[in-house]
Length: 451
Image (cartoon, rainbow, N blue to C red; front, side):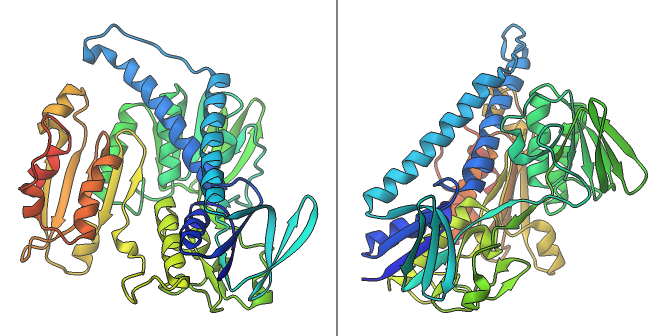
């Protein structure tokens, strides 16, 4: 029987554990924080829950457009905190139940490599040694703390200090205009905070399609968000009852609170990687296409692998690793195709994309066909009183194969699933166009774009 020890019980570790156990492995999962994953249950899920609350508030505020009297909802911080704790508890309990139902042993403690086949777990009761045929490292990441500010969890916050924050900020200064940063802008603007966003480049979401970013910027500006483009924060300090953010171009922003969202760092400290001879790069474990490290018996998945930091990717990596180590893999067909991973940003309007980006295609000199349909042409968008955004589909002009797509608008994260399946399965625009979808729905815009 294959003995598998997994350090880290997040999406990657849980997926690997359950699949390997089903295939007959003896599995131990060592987790030192929360089963289900800290980045997942202490960052991703609570942020989306708060965004859902903010979205409900924003919808009610514009209820006149739906033929209702004006409503002015307000946050109940205690109730919001209870809501987040309840969701987190239910998801963690669900993960534990699933693992235990598969015969997986859960060890609450901190795991570290002793060598390529040995793991030491430090728990509240002492230490325990586990011998393993295969070891999987999936310890995730944590928010990056810059050396130019002192995070106090009161006025100067990291993301995990804000679920929920001690108080709803009167004026929040968000440092970082990537995915996490813009989600916080949307969230706290919906809660009624004044918001300023420090944008280090000339557009928010610098890695995204400029056309997509422009829609979000326009919406932010209409909502009264202050955008400071081309500015990098160099210091954040407490100033009386608020904070002061200094930028490298001389601009100064004052607010009641500041939130730092400038990326993450891998949780590789104390893992004993040097002892086992595992190669790293900037703290990330270097892995091949099968997620195997430089040591054949050691794999890495999730954020620690340095690949796309998405829960969906981590889960897929975990499953693929389980198939590989249990002999269920087909060579060349068991590797994660990161280029086909769908991603979403839960702002309002939502943003989602998958596959090839238009700018990348042009940079590569590749011929593509681009079709775009605005939400304003959709009956369901008008019914929802929210015609913002568009659907864009990229295809090969010779074969019609769908290469990618971007969606900006309500429920984009759900709608992108259709385009994602098309990209993964090499479907054509004709396949999409010939699909008989429900009317009236937003999904009909996908067939319109395929036409």
